[in-house]
Length: 158
Image (cartoon, rainbow, N blue to C red; front, side):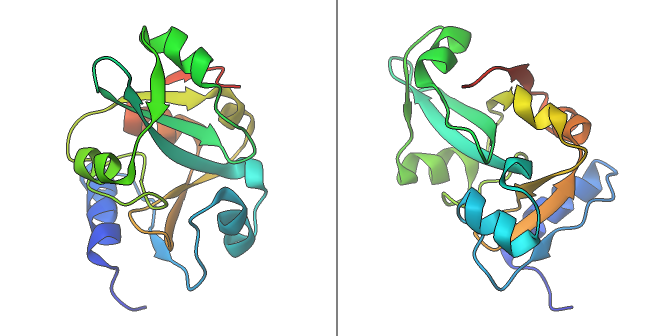
């Protein structure tokens, strides 16, 4: 197996540092969108844990929403949870806050701690798949693992 790219290796190292056995894999197909990821992995779209970065409209505070691949995020509902309107973050902001490009943002190993909201629908899956640092890298985990890794709060996002 070839070595992981630097961004994917950073995620693998973060998983190992937490004592977790999850293995990052890099696929030849893109996993940039939930549909592409599900097709490349061979799972259902709802098993994809997509990491979406939002920005507080007043505070510019970064927020990570981890949503089931089959769900759209209701920004008004997210605003209720964080106490201010939110907007989807621009690519430069995402990279600055997380250290990763859109399409490869993992749920952990960010440049700085982020507040994390986790879609309640992910709790219905026995296993889920998350991005691992690049638009070609993923790793498998359970919903409980996701909560342990992120310290996220389970909420209704739709």
